[in-house]
Image (cartoon, rainbow, N blue to C red; front, side, top):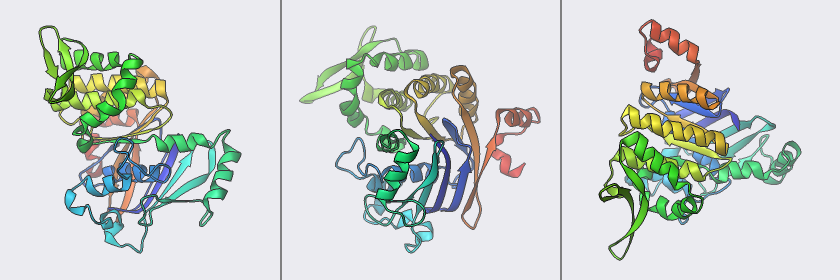
Length: 335
């Protein structure tokens, strides 16, 4: 599990260090504070171990990062550099709980970022150090290789996620979790999932008591929930990055999705980073994490004009005290 993270020269972040990371980490703060860039930096780091997007095997993770905020930047990666200055290469340093030397990952313009440790140490030295600190260095590789980033664009790729994961879900009968999410979180009288012939192919559909409904025709909140549950159900010992999971969600549906997510985090040994603007999400995750025995930390992210990004941890007790005073943690920068 990552316990500390340091980012330099990535997008709008000149420097940022976050310590005391937990199994679930919530990033709050104003727009353009750097929350999404922190998620992206971790995804960029994973590209050093597995450069291809796990669902678009022909697409590189770096290309996904370049284009996900807008298609006009698809031919240039300069947006990944702080202030567009290519001479200052993005660098991500990661500290693990049982790994004394940090892992430093540097983006040099290639599809696969370089792994360096202790300055200019090469990959062979890095693997040797890992072997001395872990029973099997493959644990670190697997942690990053299987990393997934879920954002608004990802939800529009539902058919790709279906093709990649649904057979595995059905074979293990993990589809029951999807049914539970839809039934309890979105008040649908779901009896099961099925594939139905559609335009010379097949499309996933929800079996209701009196009819069926194609998954593509569900509301965005339900589709987000399905994708999140499918991905988390099939991940193990890895990193899950989620951008604003509250999007399109009623608090009732959000609570059910987070309940299932935290159960899977515990069962599948996942580490989660999520950005949010939702006070409800913070409260829901905080309460459910306690019920499921998952450690959670909330960080207020703030960026100065000089690109220095700070991360202040807000404990559950601090939040409760602030709310007793009528204050909202989302505006802690003006308190």
